[in-house]
Image (cartoon, rainbow, N blue to C red):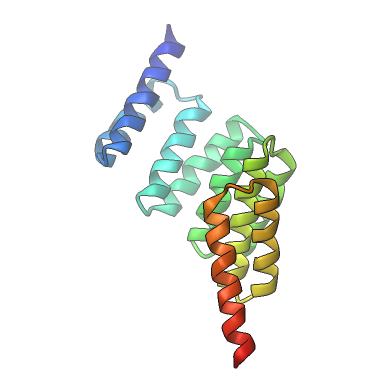
Length: 164
Protein backbone atom coordinates (compact mmCIF):
# COMPACT_ATOMS: atom_id res chain seq x y z
CA UNK A 1 0.00 0.00 0.00
CA UNK A 2 2.72 2.47 0.96
CA UNK A 3 4.67 1.82 -2.26
CA UNK A 4 1.56 2.47 -4.34
CA UNK A 5 1.14 5.75 -2.47
CA UNK A 6 4.78 6.69 -3.10
CA UNK A 7 4.48 5.87 -6.80
CA UNK A 8 1.29 7.89 -7.02
CA UNK A 9 2.93 10.91 -5.37
CA UNK A 10 5.97 10.69 -7.64
CA UNK A 11 3.78 10.46 -10.73
CA UNK A 12 1.64 13.40 -9.56
CA UNK A 13 4.78 15.49 -8.96
CA UNK A 14 6.20 14.57 -12.36
CA UNK A 15 2.93 15.54 -14.06
CA UNK A 16 2.93 18.91 -12.29
CA UNK A 17 6.54 19.52 -13.29
CA UNK A 18 5.70 18.58 -16.89
CA UNK A 19 2.84 21.11 -16.77
CA UNK A 20 5.43 23.66 -15.57
CA UNK A 21 3.79 23.86 -12.14
CA UNK A 22 7.06 23.42 -10.26
CA UNK A 23 5.75 24.90 -7.00
CA UNK A 24 2.98 22.29 -6.91
CA UNK A 25 5.44 19.54 -7.82
CA UNK A 26 7.74 20.63 -5.01
CA UNK A 27 4.86 20.68 -2.52
CA UNK A 28 3.89 17.12 -3.50
CA UNK A 29 7.47 15.91 -3.13
CA UNK A 30 7.91 17.64 0.23
CA UNK A 31 4.70 15.96 1.42
CA UNK A 32 6.06 12.64 0.12
CA UNK A 33 9.25 13.27 2.08
CA UNK A 34 7.23 13.54 5.31
CA UNK A 35 5.58 10.19 4.63
CA UNK A 36 8.64 8.44 3.15
CA UNK A 37 11.70 10.03 4.79
CA UNK A 38 13.93 7.10 3.82
CA UNK A 39 13.01 6.95 0.14
CA UNK A 40 15.91 7.78 -2.13
CA UNK A 41 13.38 8.35 -4.92
CA UNK A 42 11.85 11.35 -3.17
CA UNK A 43 15.25 12.95 -2.59
CA UNK A 44 16.31 12.17 -6.16
CA UNK A 45 13.16 13.70 -7.64
CA UNK A 46 13.50 16.79 -5.45
CA UNK A 47 17.11 17.11 -6.61
CA UNK A 48 16.09 16.88 -10.26
CA UNK A 49 13.30 19.41 -9.71
CA UNK A 50 15.72 21.83 -8.03
CA UNK A 51 18.17 21.42 -10.92
CA UNK A 52 15.39 22.07 -13.42
CA UNK A 53 14.39 25.23 -11.57
CA UNK A 54 17.91 26.65 -11.37
CA UNK A 55 18.66 25.79 -7.75
CA UNK A 56 21.74 23.56 -8.00
CA UNK A 57 22.88 24.05 -4.39
CA UNK A 58 19.51 22.84 -3.11
CA UNK A 59 19.69 20.02 -5.63
CA UNK A 60 23.06 18.93 -4.24
CA UNK A 61 21.61 18.68 -0.76
CA UNK A 62 18.81 16.39 -1.95
CA UNK A 63 21.02 14.34 -4.25
CA UNK A 64 23.61 13.80 -1.52
CA UNK A 65 20.86 12.38 0.69
CA UNK A 66 19.64 10.19 -2.19
CA UNK A 67 23.20 8.85 -2.58
CA UNK A 68 23.39 8.08 1.14
CA UNK A 69 20.26 5.97 0.76
CA UNK A 70 21.20 4.33 -2.54
CA UNK A 71 24.93 4.31 -3.06
CA UNK A 72 26.42 3.98 -6.51
CA UNK A 73 23.23 4.69 -8.44
CA UNK A 74 24.28 5.91 -11.87
CA UNK A 75 21.33 8.28 -12.36
CA UNK A 76 21.85 9.93 -8.98
CA UNK A 77 25.58 10.25 -9.68
CA UNK A 78 24.89 11.87 -13.07
CA UNK A 79 22.48 14.40 -11.55
CA UNK A 80 24.95 15.10 -8.72
CA UNK A 81 27.69 15.73 -11.28
CA UNK A 82 25.37 18.05 -13.19
CA UNK A 83 24.56 19.96 -10.01
CA UNK A 84 28.27 20.41 -9.31
CA UNK A 85 28.75 21.50 -12.91
CA UNK A 86 26.05 24.14 -12.53
CA UNK A 87 27.60 25.49 -9.33
CA UNK A 88 30.90 25.93 -11.16
CA UNK A 89 32.69 22.97 -9.57
CA UNK A 90 34.00 21.41 -12.78
CA UNK A 91 36.53 19.12 -11.14
CA UNK A 92 33.97 17.72 -8.68
CA UNK A 93 31.53 17.25 -11.55
CA UNK A 94 34.13 15.30 -13.54
CA UNK A 95 34.84 13.14 -10.48
CA UNK A 96 31.15 12.24 -10.22
CA UNK A 97 30.94 11.54 -13.97
CA UNK A 98 33.90 9.15 -13.69
CA UNK A 99 32.22 7.36 -10.79
CA UNK A 100 28.88 7.27 -12.64
CA UNK A 101 30.59 5.71 -15.65
CA UNK A 102 31.67 2.75 -13.56
CA UNK A 103 28.03 2.09 -12.62
CA UNK A 104 26.42 2.86 -15.98
CA UNK A 105 24.21 0.01 -17.13
CA UNK A 106 23.19 1.29 -20.54
CA UNK A 107 24.86 2.80 -23.57
CA UNK A 108 22.64 5.85 -23.22
CA UNK A 109 23.79 6.47 -19.64
CA UNK A 110 27.39 6.29 -20.86
CA UNK A 111 26.56 8.67 -23.71
CA UNK A 112 25.06 11.20 -21.28
CA UNK A 113 28.16 10.98 -19.09
CA UNK A 114 30.55 11.46 -22.02
CA UNK A 115 28.45 14.30 -23.43
CA UNK A 116 28.34 16.14 -20.11
CA UNK A 117 32.07 15.63 -19.55
CA UNK A 118 32.64 17.05 -23.02
CA UNK A 119 30.55 20.09 -22.12
CA UNK A 120 32.79 20.75 -19.12
CA UNK A 121 35.90 20.48 -21.30
CA UNK A 122 34.37 22.83 -23.86
CA UNK A 123 33.54 25.39 -21.16
CA UNK A 124 37.11 25.08 -19.86
CA UNK A 125 38.57 25.72 -23.34
CA UNK A 126 39.75 22.15 -23.86
CA UNK A 127 38.18 21.83 -27.31
CA UNK A 128 40.02 18.76 -28.61
CA UNK A 129 39.26 16.89 -25.40
CA UNK A 130 35.61 18.01 -25.63
CA UNK A 131 35.38 16.71 -29.20
CA UNK A 132 36.78 13.35 -28.09
CA UNK A 133 34.12 13.09 -25.36
CA UNK A 134 31.33 13.99 -27.79
CA UNK A 135 32.58 11.33 -30.22
CA UNK A 136 32.61 8.78 -27.35
CA UNK A 137 29.04 9.77 -26.53
CA UNK A 138 27.97 9.16 -30.12
CA UNK A 139 29.83 5.85 -30.25
CA UNK A 140 27.69 4.72 -27.29
CA UNK A 141 24.41 6.15 -28.62
CA UNK A 142 24.51 7.26 -32.24
CA UNK A 143 21.03 8.77 -31.94
CA UNK A 144 21.91 11.08 -29.03
CA UNK A 145 21.08 14.42 -30.64
CA UNK A 146 22.57 16.63 -27.93
CA UNK A 147 25.97 14.99 -28.37
CA UNK A 148 25.67 15.33 -32.15
CA UNK A 149 24.93 19.05 -31.81
CA UNK A 150 27.76 19.52 -29.32
CA UNK A 151 30.23 17.79 -31.63
CA UNK A 152 29.10 19.99 -34.50
CA UNK A 153 29.56 23.08 -32.31
CA UNK A 154 33.04 22.13 -31.11
CA UNK A 155 34.15 21.17 -34.63
CA UNK A 156 32.86 24.50 -35.96
CA UNK A 157 34.66 26.29 -33.16
CA UNK A 158 37.88 24.37 -33.83
CA UNK A 159 37.54 25.31 -37.52
CA UNK A 160 37.37 29.00 -36.59
CA UNK A 161 40.38 28.72 -34.29
CA UNK A 162 42.36 26.97 -37.01
CA UNK A 163 41.77 29.90 -39.36
CA UNK A 164 43.08 32.49 -36.89
